[in-house]
Structures are given as C-alpha cells and as structure tokens.
Image 1 (cartoon, rainbow, N blue to C red):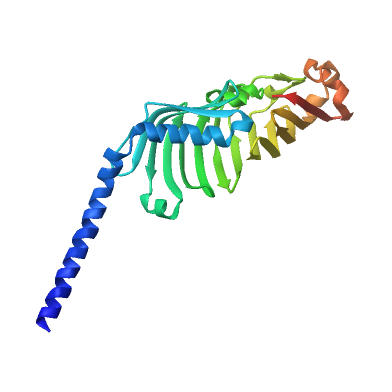
Image 2 (image 1 turned 180 degrees about the vertical axis):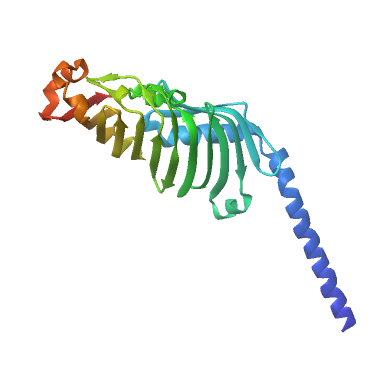
Length: 272
C-alpha cells in the first residue's frame, strides 16, 4: 500500500512539474519565438484584407512586444483610400492567452488620440467595447472630411457586435465652423452635439444626430454608403432669431429649403 501511495505521489509531483514548466515557458515562447514582424504583418494584413472593398488600410510604427503577452506601438494609422482617417498613439495591448486555445482573440487596449484617451476590451471576431474620452474634433481627420471642423472634445463609446459597430457620442462644448457640403450648413450656431450611428462594412447609418445652440436646434439622419452621403438635416431656428429671418444671410443661403416658417429641411447628398 505504501509503495502504491509513493508511486501516486511521484506521479503527481512529475505532473505538477510538467504543468508548472509549461506555464513558465509560455511567456518565454511568446517573447523569443514570436517575431515582431509576424505580429505587424498579421495586424496590418488582417485589417486591410477584411476592409479591402472599403479602401480601408492600417499601418503601424514602433511596434514591439512586451512581457506576458503585451504589445506596444508608437502609432497606428487608419486610412480610407488615400485619406487619413484616424491615428492612435501610445498604444498598449494586453492579450489573454487562454482564449487562444478556443480560437478567440481576447485583448484589452489603451491609447491616445490627440490629447484624448481610448480604453477598450475586445473578444474578436464577435464583440467588444471601447470608451472615448475628451478627443479633439480636429484629431479625427475623417470628421474633417465630413465638414465637421472647429473646436470641441468628443466623448462616448463604440460597441462591436458581430460585424457592426454602434457608436454613441457627445460634444458638449463645440465651437464649429460653418460647412459647405453641396449646401451651406450653419454649424457655428450649435455648441452641443449628440449622436448615435452604426457602421457595417462600408455603410454608415446615422440613426440620430442632434445639434443645440442659442440660435436654434437641428437634427440629422440618413446613411453614407460607399462614401456617398444620403442625409437630411432638419433646421429649426430659435424664435428670437427667426424674427429676423429675412435679414439673416445664413438663412438666405438656405431659403429654398424652407418648408414652413421656422422649419427647414436640407438634403445633404453627394460624395464625402
């Protein structure tokens, strides 16, 4: 009986040694056996291949591995066609290795966009969520291409579910410039913006976007498919400002879109 117990004890010790050795060796295999070039090519190639029809590509600078399944990068740039769309700097990613056995890529990410921050966690390819905190409007070139220029800070969150990304955001302190996208839009009227939109492939659906300011209120909805806008903007000037409607140069430029006194419906159509 004692000999049998001794054999079991030795077997358990050997088993524990093997398990501990395996656990200890995993970080070293990651650090020494997985080249940075493989990570870089996999990241840039997978994003670009998945979005090739949309003309979206990604490039990285200063990519390097850390210990215990961490990856750092100085910069990640996203482009739509030849136009820059978004740049994230000071990136830190921590990978959960246990999900790799389930063929799932689970990781957390932190970084900066301008002087703002991003902080998120993802379980690809199915789900994830990212918080956006105090990101300047001008730090997102894609917004500039949509005619959204000026000063202000964006906060919100982006939620990935299956193949769609739902975005909820607000700009509580906007100081925008007027825009001309086929028609002149008096965006300088508004200092608070909120919106909800979703992205699926190369299609953007704007469910609701509201603009508030001393001179009035506006809301927009519609879609952007393959870079072509099909939006409408409802504009309702403040009653006091509307009293001088005939004297307003801003309203004179969009007078053809007036549906009724104090209510304008402006189509925003054409390429981004």
